[in-house]
Image (cartoon, rainbow, N blue to C red):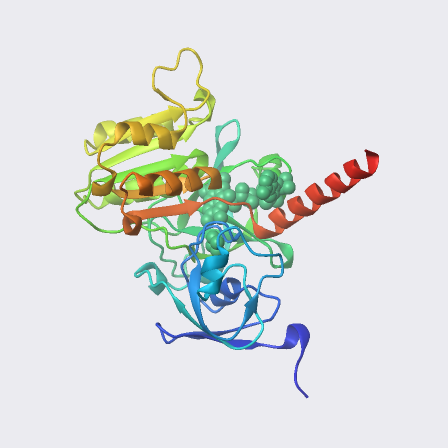
Length: 361
Ligand SMILES: Cc1cc2nc3c(=O)[nH]c(=O)nc-3n(C[C@H](O)[C@H](O)[C@H](O)COP(=O)(O)OP(=O)(O)OC[C@H]3O[C@@H](n4cnc5c(N)ncnc54)[C@H](O)[C@@H]3O)c2cc1C
Ligand code: FES
């Protein structure tokens, strides 16, 4: 008898890497690949950023939640799919963008313990996770881990510590009011809680080159950039780095002194904090962080650009930097979207609110 529904498994062949994995019809192609230990290119996992786009060579897919924002109808007609949203309707053959070397690291599921939480400002905490000493865990600076919740749901957080000493991971966690994971963490930060994580994930990694680096972070988007900066410094790499860090107000600059010290000790790091709503006393840059970068950088084309943080900031950078000469192949980004289950819940709530207000009117 043929299995059907959730028991059915379809096969996905990746032509240009020779790897294959199986997928359930209800599972996204990206989730299935990650579950099989493959770290395919992706960032937001929410269908917005386009980083997981692949070419569908054979077979058919569909999008159960409608066409995602990160793909145009022209791209669909040309045979592209978004791996984080597409569901297989048959066996598939795809061609993915290969981004060595992060793809070569094995994605692992591991238990870990919250060793220490340090409140950095009103809504950001450094969380230090201790991994089992007997387990090998290698990552590249810039990557992130998923914290696994019940029911297969997950929350992504970038690693702020450098790869050396990788058994103690530091995360910068922002409290999202109403957020399932961060509400509980901020309510009881002192609990030595056990967590399950999966990682390392993501293709947002430091890449060797001679070009000066522009590092642009929004809020906790600083985390993966700190990992990169600490990696460069710890290994004595000869890179010139300019870090633009965008926050709302002075109270949000949770690592200001730490970065000032790094910049003082390491001459090749320039630090420019940018506030969108700084007080009258703020003497530094003001406005949106990407606008400050555009004002301060004559030659975007000559830089390797790493940018991480809120999806709106990433979208503005992608839209404006390319037209100002940034090289697309050297513009790396990490979009901090909410988890797919939480976006779906938010969408349902917004829909039901608009129905009830329509009924009232
Ligand atoms: C690759 C990656 C790396 C990340 N790294 C970090 C990091 O280093 N530090 C960090 O602080 N965060 C990071 N994030 C973001 C973090 O994963 C989310 O903030 C996470 O969802 C918070 O989990 P939670 O359970 O507390 O909140 P959730 O339970 O996910 O809920 C979030 C709240 O937001 C609401 N919400 C959901 N969707 C929307 C929407 N579209 N618009 C408005 N509101 C919405 C929900 O209703 C809910 O109230 C990263 C995200 C990604 C994808
Ligand atoms: S669109 Fe798939 S990872 Fe962003």
